[in-house]
Image (cartoon, rainbow, N blue to C red; front, side, top):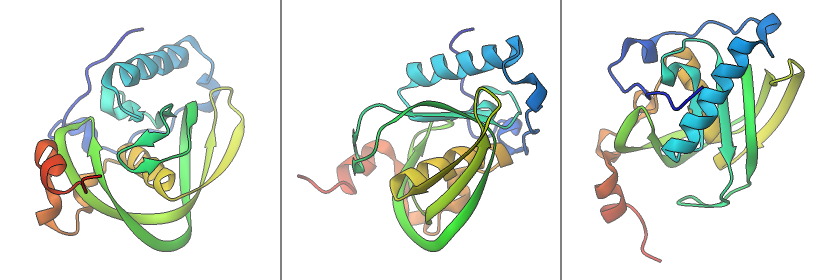
Length: 179
């Protein structure tokens, strides 16, 4: 149980559909170790979400934690460390909005991506219980971004305008409104 290497764009695991996690293994030692590795790796990286394929474990498990409500996207709702097993997203409203996204597997880069802004997520929690969450706005974007990793997709696949893909330094220099 430790901080794991986050694999980067180009690694084949990031382009595979991850296997559903066997529900009977939730709360097993293997599951607890995976969740602990994800927790420690996420904390070490400074990110807000991490999917198991990003640490080269091709199963449908992801974690999200938003502890600081002040982000570059403005005020957002905090979310305690939460484990999502075999999540399924349903779009409740197809209206989209765009945000600049970054990714721990595409370090140092940012891209503007439009996604549906009202979704429902059905998943199993770390106790094996079925759960449902309804999300809107930035949180809907966060969840879609993380769960895309479970199906071999990265935010760079969703860029509509290649002119809105840049290094993080240039994003901060040219695309952030000064306040």
